[in-house]
Every structure is written in C-alpha cells, then in structure tokens.
Image: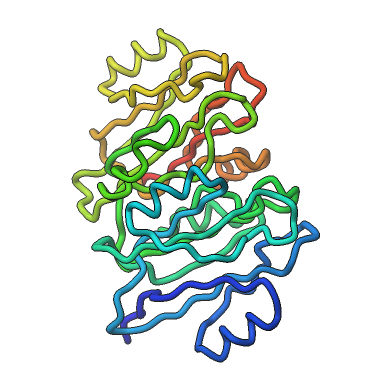
Length: 293
C-alpha cells in the first residue's frame, strides 16, 4: 500500500471566490463550515498533501493578539483568514509550523461532541480552541493525526504569555483555551509535550483542589505542576499533577468546555477528572480528559 503523503499546505476560505482559487491550486477542503451554528460566513479549511515537500508538523490557534507573539517568535506562520468571519465572536486564526516533529497526515473537523471520543481513541489530537469561540454557534474543533503514534510525556502550565516562545521551541503544544475563561483571573494555559518514545509517556493525570488531595497525590508518586490554575480568580488553589509509572500510556489530552462533553467522554470510556478547573469562581466549568492505552 502506498504511503500516505503528509499535509504540506493549509489555507482557509471565507467566500466562493477563494474556494474556486484554492480548488484550482489543487487544494482539498474539509466539508464542515467552521462557522457552523451561527450567522457568520461559510468558512472552510483547505489542505494539500505532497510527497517530497517539507510537511506541516504542528498547528495552533490564536484568539487574541497576546497569543500571537510567542507563535511568531517561534517561527509559526499565520493563515490570515478569521475563522469567525462575520460571526461576531473572537478573531480566531490558525498557525502552523514545519519542524522536526512527526508529520501530520490527516485532519478532521467536529461540530458535535458525540464525534470526539472516537477520534481521541483512534489517535487524533484535538486543538484546544473552539473555532466558534464566543460566537454562540456549535462547538467546532480541528483534529489532526500524525504519521506515527506519539505519547504525552510532559505537562505544564503558564500565566500570561511571557514563556510562550520558549515552550514552543521546546516542542510543547499549548491548549489554546484560557483556564480562567469568564472567571476574571489571569490568563492561564495548559501545555503538553509529545514523544515517539512510549517509555517516556505519562500514565495518569490528576487535579487537586485541597491540601489533603495534594498530600494524597504526593504519596501516590504524582508530580505537581506548581502553577495555581485558579490564579487571580478567587477560587481554591487548583493544581494539575502527572504520573509516569504505570502500564497504560497517555495518547490524548483534552480540555472539556462543552457542557455535554463530560458525559459523552465518560460514556465512551475516556478518563475524565472529576474536578472543575474553575471551582469556586463564576467561570466556565472546565474538565481535563485523557485517553491512555
């Protein structure tokens, strides 16, 4: 069987003229409107797959100007089309990088949470940003699949944006959603790094919301990310933890914001941590889900 070529080019169309141009240039499109469920323009993602051309290996999103600086400094290229065009939500842009990471060979778009757990269990990675963010439409997410299996080997967190460039350059992926969304605290983001080496993979993730839970996780050998995920929002101290020891290895890691997501992921056998990351605040209820096998 012929090898599946990697994705080498990405583009976005926001009108029929752009669609015709991209089609003439040999691009394929994903037939899901990225503005699904709102009154914005029809927005589609286009891609090209080629052999012998440097492949795209990483994709991120930005939903405000602060998120752009680290991406630019780390060498990411922006696709200059707002994914929320005409919808009135955040200005959302896709960014991509061609580095030494494992090439991306497939892309999918979901607009219904019932589609998500199957993709996660089949080796797809989901971008953290809802492509309809603040536009009151469906929850729309972009998923990618790599040429080879990879595993999550590290997680961390940041306040603000000062560390973005260095983490991108170290190979981390930012989960492009603010943990303090609507909670009026600082911008807080989760990050993870992947490896092809299964022996380096994490086996479990946990969240603590009290000192007693912190003590219990330490006894079990979990390692704390020493960043309060509730910083500035007025709730309890919330920390995320990781464990390397264990037979199962984490392949996928998502932040759930869709109110239906927690139930759908649990029904599908995906681990959902029973701790709201916005506990004690007026922010959106957020949960961490991960798949280990």
